Length: 218
Length: 297
Image (tube, rainbow over all chains, first blue to last red; front, side, top):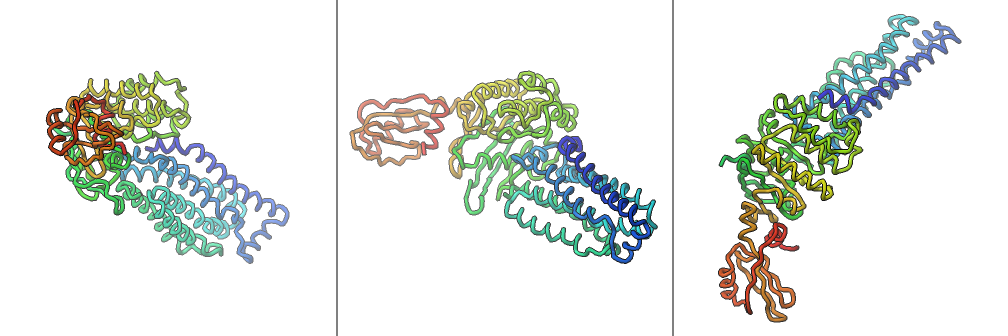
């Protein structure tokens, strides 16, 4: 199953890894340029007094990346109901869907880890632990939003009924809003474990879409 | 003979619209059964129910004795499915798609059968399926089914979008494979001439029910068109369950029936029909028989 998903998404995955890494690199370049002119002490001061984290450019990047991955992965499945072929394979439907989604989740997590490694590798050299961890923890809900966007978009795309698809879309928008309620840096810190569990639980929604597809709820 | 497919008392509605009620049929092992019907009579609905993508409102369908809705996934190894329009994964090329499917059918996958058919296609091995013509895609879909080597083939409107050459290639390859390996086939098609070359048995559906299920040869041998002349201006008032779609055009009368000519003559006379001269009887092609049974409109 992973082979099929790889064939389908490999060029997009390359683009996703390059683009998100590029955005992360751009944030650091911006920070580095200002630090060269004003000095790193000035940067620390701004971070502490003005609640700035210097990674704001990344805010919606994981969201867009997750959405596009869901499109690239699941629109071809729904094209001419190609999903019927996938569900006709001699494997349990639960396993098929879980494998398809786990491919996407692993790809997004790998991309996220790469982004965090890029950010950490520079930030920990120029900032105190409290400051660089604040930057990364601020960005973490945005990356979870990317994962949520992927799972919610796949839930919507796999839904066989158009009216229900619109409903799913509206619910998805409300759910995504949760990840962007508060702009203050590190404001989600105490909520992060719950948010992570909630995000992964969104996977279950996709099984509902598949069950409805199987019952012919068009 | 053992039944590979057994559907009992199927009833299905789309919203409030009845598709059919209490529909029952069986497909014996080793037979090629064609499902014929006008648009909207429920052919694709039946295929969807059979392939497990539609839950009927009531009734049960069994394949190899197993209820489709609770089928063991491994049993799907024995069922080859062709989706309407020869749909396959568009983003793959012919090598990738073969490699992908092969892993799911260990011990039964026939790579050679697939590549034998692919050799007839004038496509590069790396050409994506999305860039193939409908005819070429149909051969890829057929090649994959031949490689899967299933015991039962379910084919939904296999002739759609194919030119006569590809249709003939598809039918000939399929028939040779099915007869040589004693496979069972359940199929639908809009092109009835193809069915005539391929099927052993026919189910002809009308809105809401099955009109007849018989061996093809039996239909061709026993179902006839009867014609005669009638007085100009004659208004037809004929209602007999054994006489299908009687019609008068000017002074020409026609009716279809499974009954022998004498029986038809007697029934017409009994109904007060102004029979003048001889009642001619004609043998029919499957397409004519289909129209005779379902009507022109």
